[in-house]
Length: 246
Image (cartoon, rainbow, N blue to C red; front, side, top):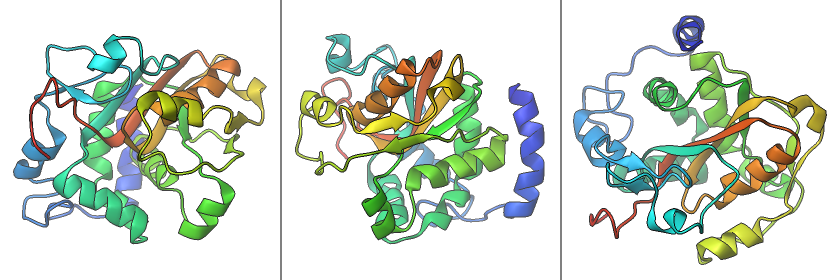
């Protein structure tokens, strides 16, 4: 199925954009992602915690919290393209807070190629939804933009009917367990029978504790989804296991 995705994506690539000559993250030549940014931010030398997506040492399966049973439990796997720091962090913030969603297409090809090398083929994708007032303020949902880029590259369907029905305050200062509790009950699947027996990727831009992925995964599981994988652009780094500075 992965080979079929690659073939389908060729048409979309030709129509959407030409090959980029400069790195989308730092502006250096030899894009779309230069070797320096690959080494510093994509960190292929590190493993991603299977539960929350945090970057850990290559010999570890889970971060310390998830190994102790304190992480998300509804996902089969979570993976992040890179470490949320430096130029990758600034790229994501520019997309979100400076209203530049079109920048996502500059990284669509390498991100998509990486995604299908890390996750099993599925029936479709669910973009983490935004609450209606936040969506109106920003004008776009960055998770939907990322899902659209993956759709163009891979031909993977975007599945409808998952909504956010309540706003919540920022989670920046909350602990992992507080975030998991804070997001309880804010997502709903409008037509659960549509998801019965399906397999999905949940798409977001950044994960820190995996709490948002977990909250969406929980309602999908209740709707009969068979396998759930979280995919995002960037995650944090388990500093106790990988003692690196941002």
